[in-house]
Image (cartoon, rainbow, N blue to C red):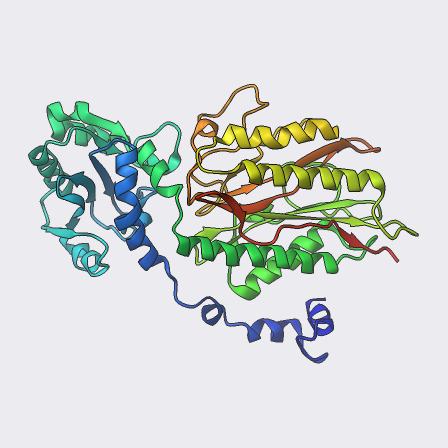
Length: 439
């Protein structure tokens, strides 16, 4: 089917097989050199000083080690740690500094990365953490952030035994330890312009492939799982991986709502509204999250029925209202409320999902949650201030009851970046409901 589709698109001759199509695309050549090393260096030097300041932290200590490493390790260059290494980031009267105490077996390679001001080689038998503590005592930092967090897994890498050892070494200064939750939040929630460009490319592929997938649907024959397999093939062809759990990506659903789930063998039939929720990971780093919707025309229909079009237009309007509310200074709960007002006016049933979430390094990334305006409890992250440079995936909802039971939700999901004066879509949003002929 892939070969047939590309033949009709004028991309290959009728004699070319699927395997020959795949061999035409060299993922390494298509994607080019991984830009992460340069971007990581820039994120440390340009974004981290502001994050420390915003979190009101003087020093941030991260301990990295082999096999049970800190979640933030590859963001700071500690992903290859063998013996225990201590990374320090701090602001003082002279500016921002990054200092690493690294075992001698890894220090040379770490220094070669040229992402830290100074890498101190620690000889065997000497504790890198002990040397870092001596430096902390010398500097007499008032607040020392460490990766212990009850709310952010990316800021919760310090083990119990590491914490006990650190507190023992710090002595009285252990009272100055604070959680790095706010540091990690302020740092990871902001994306550089270079990262936004990568996310745009990922988003465009994600959307384009969903459109291609809908062209493969044969009503009465194709299953949701067939469409998911087609998208998996596109991922393999371009050398990308799943945006989230592979068993649930993509989630193709032509029946009643199933929430976060896998595609089943349900046969796609005339009258179905099809949802594809799909995300890819590029450069093994940046993630997209886009949904596209289609309607399968019944015999004799040339357009979707009025009720389906109302649901679609309602969901789309909610998404556009969320985009308008997504601006610096607003809170996540404000964005959620903006589109839920329209949901109520349009007669939508209740939808339990948040309007949106940060997206970037994972599908549900660090940053403000766009929800909480109608929930029984409000997530702390939904009260957070939205800032320039944040990237989000967010929905416009409309839910209704199906004749054969259950509910169906249109969730018009797009990706956007927050700019100085408001937010803008990463790619052109879906304007029209895709129509699939049954004839």
